[in-house]
Picture 1 (cartoon, rainbow, N blue to C red):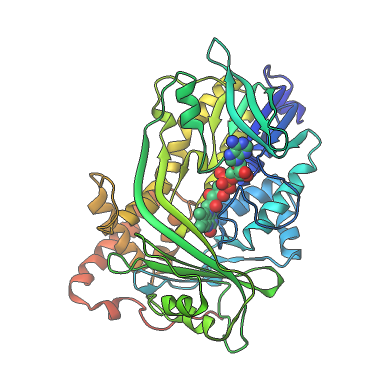
Picture 2 (picture 1 turned 90 degrees about the vertical axis):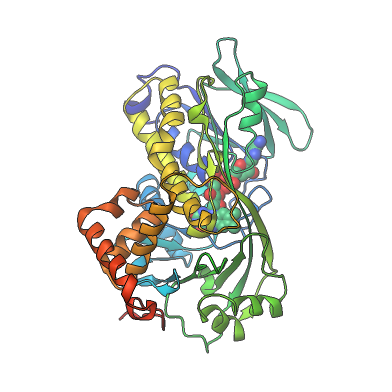
Length: 469
Ligand SMILES: Cc1cc2nc3c(=O)[nH]c(=O)nc-3n(C[C@H](O)[C@H](O)[C@H](O)COP(=O)(O)OP(=O)(O)OC[C@H]3O[C@@H](n4cnc5c(N)ncnc54)[C@H](O)[C@@H]3O)c2cc1C
């Protein structure tokens, strides 16, 4: 434990983290600086092998690691990025390394100082876990499912009850702080209701998204001109997309997705046919001769979901949620793991202020929406609501925000400042208000005027994929 940060503060003997995935590992790393002991409880076996596991059903799909994740792990686990590189991951400036087809046109490709890491999700998680395991005051309790946090009469969470997967025995673990990082399937709303606090409001926007992914060996005939190809839908007429990513061992991971009940099928011929309906042909070119190395895996995401713990009138002390347990948004923009990283870095700031544990927990619960959830919701869910099929309330600013961001998105095809600002907002690097800085705002309005008179193909690069030197 970092003595300066922790020992002077009472109530920092033991913290429990429910869930040993991305959000749980990053939170545990940060808590280890301030608490004498940290225990991660997970229902899965948690070894350090880079293989998908049951508790994280999304792990066989493409997972992009965005800038603020890169920055967080560089700070929290020095040398981890280099370890990933040594295992065959790529670390690159996404302005040049990523080729993104968005709004029916290509984003400009040029340096934009937004670093991405490409590797498989299991490798990333395994490396994070093995580094966390090396922390002397962090312990893992695998194969144990938390059934409920335990609350005392004064309304303070004092531990958890966990069930051993092998024996079914329930044991009680005591703690000064419990952090729920149990992901999208969190039972926290039910736990809170059972403890007498009522359930949080949950905002949901239905998208019925389905990813289908597999690993490939690239055919020599397909010239790799980017680390990652992202072919986004072009709303409202197209709701299919794909991400192709170079990962470790020289292999490529491809996930295609459909929304609103539309899903790629799990056979090669249909998967190829699906790719032919995307807004640009690169995935079809890739698939034609590349060799599939793994089974197809499917993963459905029915809704964007945000539990509004911040709006609850009463809440137990010494408990809060992080990562997908707070909100889980449409993954096509790859924000989930980065949200978890931002949560962890905010927790670190609060702990370093030396606040008492109940205040840290309360400020996490209250502060997370303004910190990042609202932005993630605006950048992804507003995009989903553009589709008439998306069921959910359109907020008052919806029409203006979606019109304006569409203008910036198109401008990003030819203007580097617009491209950087747009990507920085989508990747949660800069707040959404950066899109409204006066110079960019003026450019967007000028572009909006051109939009009325100049045909789409002459305003943007709707043709061939831009190359970089
Ligand atoms: C198809 C798809 C593609 C995605 N692509 C990207 C991407 O490109 N980039 C990106 O950043 N994000 C992406 N995401 C989102 C990302 O997967 C999640 O945001 C991220 O995994 C959230 O991490 P987490 O730790 O909060 O939860 P999870 O990773 O879901 O982990 C939850 C953990 O809690 C454990 N657990 C659950 N309940 C209990 C319990 N009661 N007791 C004990 N343990 C429990 C589970 O075993 C698991 O280990 C994608 C998601 C999907 C579905």
